[in-house]
Length: 171
Ligand code: AR6
Image 1: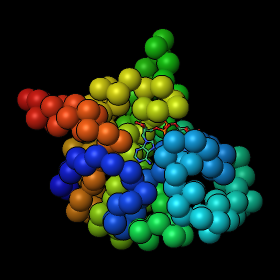
Image 2 (image 1 turned 135 degrees about the vertical axis):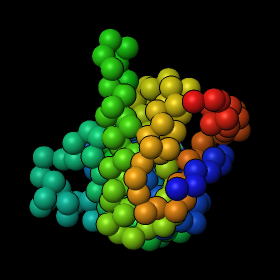
Image 3 (image 1 turned 90 degrees about the horizontal axis):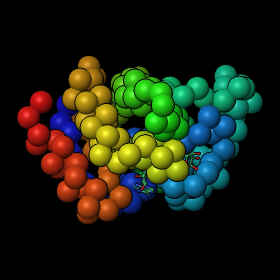
Image 4 (image 1 turned 30 degrees about the vertical axis):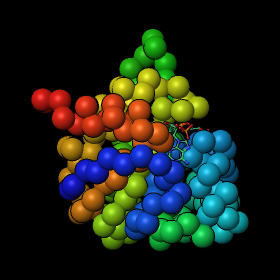
């Protein structure tokens, strides 16, 4: 899988699937989640409500992923995943990496070849940005998937530069 780093708004990415940094309730929120629901429109929310009424009655657990329509977004699907809230006194990084792996697994089932990821947990959920980048790239590089291109969308140029540095660091 090719990994691309880009800066900007994830809702403007023309890809097969856009990953949402959601919460377990799946009914919207701030950050990426707010933007995705705003641009995706009521179809995305309706699909999320359906999931909550059926298979995900108790919400989506942290580290897992599920797909819905992308509504009016320039993508076919939104893959919702729930990152862990950062905690300095416990290592939740496996759950964070799991978000990327689980999203790719869902993308494989959908047949999505291009997937755009936000920097999961690095906003409202407080994960330190550099480590969030490291976890994302570790998970994406190790993933066994049919997805051809994963595009990690950093919100601004300074985060993009940081991600480029991390990507180019010797492993
Ligand atoms: N495009 C790309 N990146 C963005 C965008 C955007 N439109 N908006 C924010 N970011 P966050 P989390 C960056 O908070 O930390 C929500 O309320 C942002 O700068 O969206 O996983 C949910 O409902 C940061 O680097 O997600 C949950 O309750 C990264 O995306 C909770 O927040 C992730 O920030 C999830 O928090």
